[in-house]
Image (cartoon, rainbow, N blue to C red):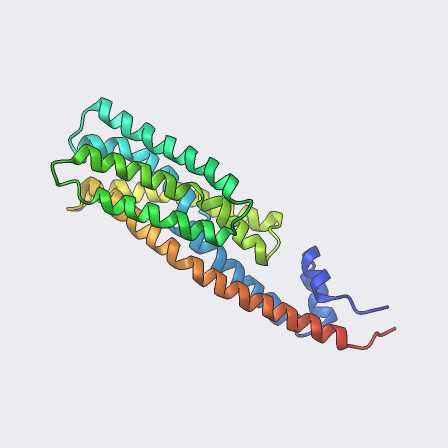
Length: 245
């Protein structure tokens, strides 16, 4: 019987097989767990920082922008509905553009290209004390809609570049996204009702989330390269091991 390759064990999800065939496999397994955390949490907990800051902020921003326009900016109901519709229209357009761009661009490239738009949109909204309130909010909604449109899908694709997205991993992502969708709108409500930020808290939460998500992309790439190097060394080590009966 030949020793079972660690890479084969990992692809099948049999962690016991890894430990039995190679004591060093536990090190690789631990590194993979760290990599999963580094790739998932950034995306989901911020905008989730990416796989999500994005999914999370899609829901939070889309749910609060109408109220923000009425309560914070003093716009009419019609203008509030128009801004909300503009946000979702920009989001849809961004998804379509990202779908075609994904054919030739890497997931990380799309994240680096889209997230600065969301950051700029949140920053623009913080200037709504000026006379051009409606125009600034319109620009903000369009930029944020375009900026978050590519987040979740490309964060997931980035993760899959280094670790196969099994049912367990996608389930964890879905759980984090669901938790964020419940938590972040509540945070915005608390800021609006109980702090001096009032409804401007929506834009501050958005800005912080998008910046955190963008910062996590290079971190995820760095850990991904480290994991790839570790897997390469592990595979080379296994190839040198003699066959056993």
